[in-house]
Image (cartoon, rainbow, N blue to C red):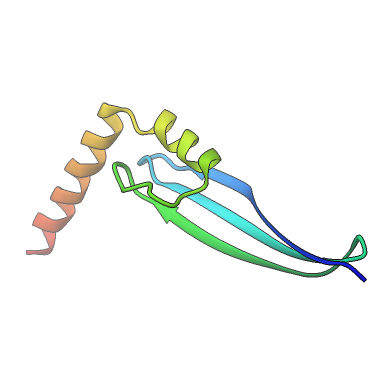
Length: 85
């Protein structure tokens, strides 16, 4: 009887404001048969620290987060904060 656990990123989505959403799936396998599966979802905002983030997600972030996207995101956040006060 062999039990293995694997975790992979199975979905990556970039939305209009540059935020990146990704889902990791963890599968528990016993002798080649899946006995359990769980999901974990995470989100990242433009210019966020990418330490510890899976490499394929970092590659998408680096492609999506141009200087213009980061500036637009920061401007939108500043405008939203100003509207709250």
